Length: 173
Image (cartoon, rainbow, N blue to C red; front, side):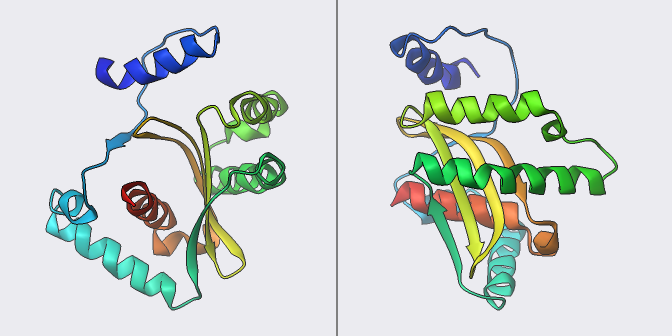
């Protein structure tokens, strides 16, 4: 929607970035004042599913969300992100864009040039295992859910949904 593009375009202009505008879908959420206000907008079945999955996955270990603000750590985690994406898409008999070295370089460059300038990188952990990674963007009060990847060994626990749920809670706090 045009409203959603305004902060992105302003950020790019302020940072003197060149850009090409193309229409694409990137889910976003404007945060309400409380988590319960957001949750009230969800269907009953969706709320119940999120609670059930969070309870199930919590039985496997401590679930924690980590927002990574260290450039070196992001660069260290990118290979895990690429591999999880490749494995997920391969299991669906589709090629991942991360099989292409140029695409990987593009993501490393996004880290290089957008670090502390709107890059959002977060990891969902179960004890010491990475179960989900999100590579996205944040600007003002907006979080752009751009590129998620998850560990296939946890797919029956809806790691992407849990990751997004915890990001929403984090964004409101």
